[in-house]
Length: 414
Ligand SMILES: Cc1cc2nc3c(=O)[nH]c(=O)nc-3n(C[C@H](O)[C@H](O)[C@H](O)COP(=O)(O)OP(=O)(O)OC[C@H]3O[C@@H](n4cnc5c(N)ncnc54)[C@H](O)[C@@H]3O)c2cc1C
Image 1 (cartoon, rainbow, N blue to C red):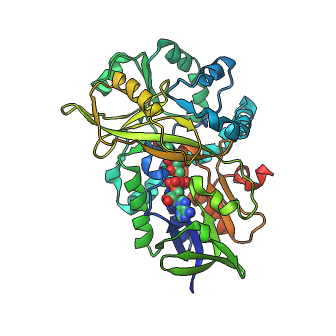
Image 2 (image 1 turned 60 degrees about the vertical axis):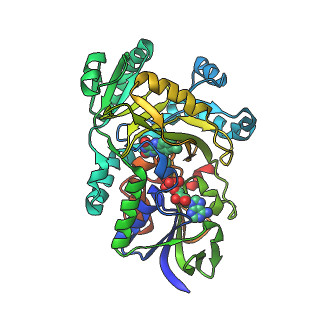
């Protein structure tokens, strides 16, 4: 039987980054996925390496906003009414954890990861030689209604403590940066983030680096993991493999490992869609655009423009429902009339793995020797995957972690 120090389960941005950091610390690493690297949520996201998202996406607190969401007619959030009873316990915990005091705690916990995000990507990108996939132009947050823009500006001081760089744009200055947009109330150009023109290929480039440096990649089903002797055994397409240590970095599919072992984690899934579009003539987007009110992004990818949606609460394995992407498409066409035909008939559907306190699980398993977790990266897995990979590798290797990891323990769920 093959023997390795560690098996990393899941080759999304989180698993590949964790595998790279363990390899760099001298572990012999087998990275296992049922598919090729970067084909889960890490393939279909908006490609923002979101250095400016210093405050996690919280649950709305105001009654007026809650009522608006309750009507279920919005483009930024949709829910399947039949799924509400199932997701209600998660939503209640999420709402509680979004109260200002609790949100402040999560913000402080997440901050070192967000602050490290671009630097950690840069380090891997330069070794992997994939700078061609990266743009260093930040992204632009659009406000269509004067009231929403005014509300945002009224609260902009809350970002001062974080030292972020941004430009406030009126309609004319926005038009100078990006042609082809309809009039809007105003915009913020966040300058610190980077973006990728192909998140899936970025993860593949990181996985290629992992293999070039001596890591091994194999296909297999994480469901075959079992305890064996003092360690763990997994069946892969190349035969059974034994290791003293396992990392579960399966994103939304992490329950396949922790549930049979008896861990209860309030993981909620926020579904999200994307679809690609051609443009009229040689119109193009120079920047990734986020429509704050519509809850969608329009981002320039390698071949086409990608439209991504906000949140959908529905059973993770339920078929795709086109309502939300159609609502977003309508708004996107008003903002950027150069959007032409959609390339795919069916939208891509992805699963964001979310914990109610808006923090991932980066943790040792308290009751199972040699088992570690790195999942639950919600809206910012592409952003913080490399940073959380480093943090977990430091914890596993007995090094001083670069950030306080107590808030990421699986123990916090009791
Ligand atoms: C529409 C949308 C837009 C987003 N935009 C952004 C953004 O702009 N910036 C950002 O930072 N984040 C964004 N996100 C979030 C981000 O995509 C996720 O947080 C991130 O991809 C999670 O990475 P992961 O490695 O944990 O999971 P995944 O990428 O899903 O990887 C998990 C891996 O596990 C594998 N797997 C599953 N089950 C098994 C099994 N039984 N056996 C073996 N392997 C298995 C899968 O094949 C997959 O490769 C967005 C998400 C969505 C849906």
